[in-house]
Amino acid sequence: MLAATYMKHASTRCWTKNLPLVTSVRTSRRTFILTALSTAATAAYSFVSPSISLANSLENGTYKPQHFQTTNERELQNLEAAKSNKPMFTRPEPNYPNHVPLYTFEKAMLFLGSSLGAFLHPERNEFIVALGESTAHPYFLNLLRDQMLSDPVGRQILKERPNITSTSLDLDHLSNLPPNTFGRTYVDWLHKEGVSPDTRVPVRFIDDDELAFIFQRYRQCHDFYHSITGLPIVREGEIAVKMFEFLNLKIPFAGLGAIFAPFNVKRRDERWRLFEVYYPWAWQCAIGCKPLINVYWEKIMEKDVNELRKELGVIVPPDMRQLRKVARMRRLKGLTN
Image 1: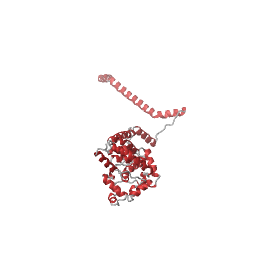
Image 2 (image 1 turned 120 degrees about the vertical axis):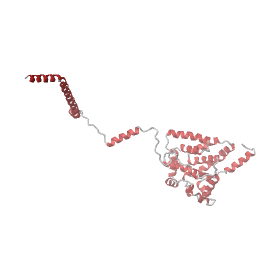
Image 3 (image 1 turned 30 degrees about the vertical axis):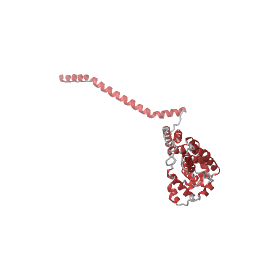
């Protein structure tokens, strides 16, 4: 009995000693259970909350159907966002081989730089080429295109778009033609002046593909104008041909050369020949001359050159090299400046 009483008192003391620990465990369990229930209730409410809000809006008459974007709408939105983020000065895609698209301010800078360079250094071809293209406004090139479209030969040229090279012309064949043919006259002029049709650089700064070809055609036919008139490629010869081209084709570049280039001619006798001999000749020749942009030069190489001049209305000017020779002799004798 004593032993039983002792054991009872011992167990009572042990339970009393561990009472705080038991209480702490029960509290932790209660806190965990309450937290879990609260989380579950929140999740359940968030799951059913849209349905409750939808039911309330339907009951109150304030429901507005939600619009969901289609795939096309998302793609269109992404495309508009890409356009808005496009860099300001992204270079457009070229419209033809060798094309270099330019912004308006770049074209203005090209014109200013090339015009100054061409005036100070007319012997540098890169300035002449850039000035020609920077002044080739679509308005004037469209006039040339309309002129070509109104002529059957011009329409054929626009359709076939020939490219003039020494290979396409077959210069060896032209060299064996009779002396009175245009082809032989052209080849003899090339040899005399030391030039080649292969030196004409391609057009780069004109945006429209067809207008670029028209200007390229004008550029490549320049030597034909020289050969049929007999004018050399010295400075005053180029200026005289530019005046003739401007009056016949209305190319702004040719007009600028005819107007401003004489100011850079230093010799008095050269200016005299331009103003008193070759400018009046250009006016007289342009009055009755056929538009030379509509001449398919490659197909009339075997034609008699004098008959061709008569057909086109081209008047042969005074021999410039002979006049220059006479002026040189006079300078040597001290008779003129």
